[in-house]
Length: 212
Image 1 (cartoon, helix red, strand yellow):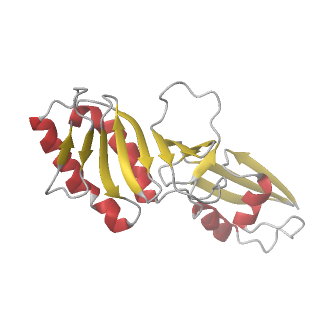
Image 2 (cartoon, rainbow, N blue to C red; image 1 turned 30 degrees about the vertical axis):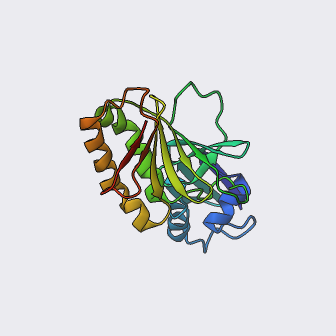
């Protein structure tokens, strides 16, 4: 059996074949390529995948990785994340501000390529929020930050920081909506382009505090 890999992968060849359940030297006659394809599609970094047999003995694995959505910094490491929160690898020659930056200050072991660094709901929300932020609030996102205790902060291009509180569990991520709506209400009353604003506390959207 020969195995040919084509496309773009967030992981190395051996890890990719292991994810598909392909064993070098195994007979191609009994391979369940549909199952192998499904196993690859379950990987959090995969956009599309297929496993086919070219007779008499070649297995062709085609895979496409999801595009980057965030630039993820943890400690001294920089990695690209997909909208599912999966690590796609280290950035190479990125232009300035190519992707929103997320700084993760939590302690823990480094996250390997192909593994999930942050919840998918959070990664997708942050990528979408960075795009919508200028129209909604009049300023852009300078960076996102996850504090050591898991609180989400948004640093704006104007310099102020919005603290949204914990944002790691599904319920906490879902609570971001009312908090961002509260920030919109603040924007209707306060000039968020002003350097006079320093901190905006949104953990309780019913009691927003703006600190000069």
